[in-house]
Image (cartoon, rainbow, N blue to C red; front, side, top):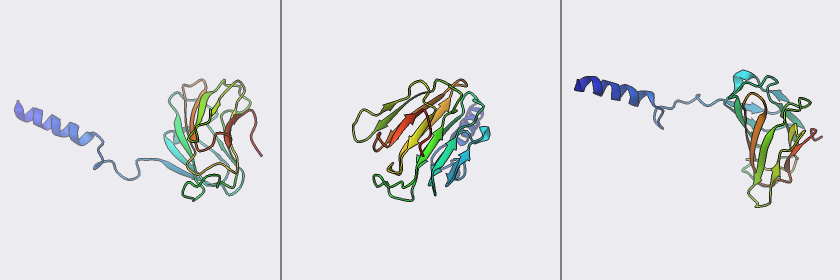
Length: 163
């Protein structure tokens, strides 16, 4: 009886992720330098955006409950303020009128931005900052977006893409 318990404890210990047994490659990272439409199979990805020009990240058109990703701006910089140099638009189902929900908070302490009716995009100006981040998921009916940025005036919810 005692040995059976020991085997179960050993099995359970080996099956739980720990810092020592989480292998390289389990985290899906997508590098984006130009327009990209994410697929249903890319749920759970971290999307690193280092744009070469104005770039659109389009979320899947079919909303599958539980689909999620994190979009992080990355200009190959060290997080210096206002150094993105290119516009990034995250398309939350433009034209679908999904009544998306979300908030963008900034570290500079201003009020931030709140998603309202017909906000189909998160627009990040060329003066956004590397490290600005958006965690996005769906309940199958709409997108939920929670952003953490350096300056919320540079990353806002909008009814149209920035150009």
